[in-house]
Length: 142
Image (tube, rainbow, N blue to C red):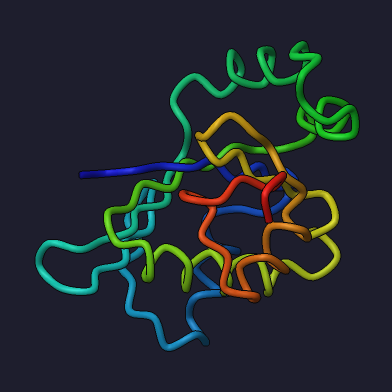
């Protein structure tokens, strides 16, 4: 069963930027016209692509008072990428690689877990590197 999360990245970071970070990782990927696909085998995958209707999502994010104030202020300066996956370990490795290679942009990047919370990418990366599984442990319980 497919799962997803959303990465909000500064607008200057393109799909090519993401592909460049993966190129040195040892992860095997295919760069399509609008997405990047990583395959572990014939059935396990991660797919990174543009979010449908990003303007509407950005409007929703920026007006949602339950989300971090800093995120609401910065989201209009972000492009949204949706990450579909059905292999947690491949998704974790992919996200760790992409986030670790963002450089200064990491401080202006965010993760929407699709579990009801948004987290700064710096925090998300630190927790991933400590072995955290965002699908089973909320940030509040970590």
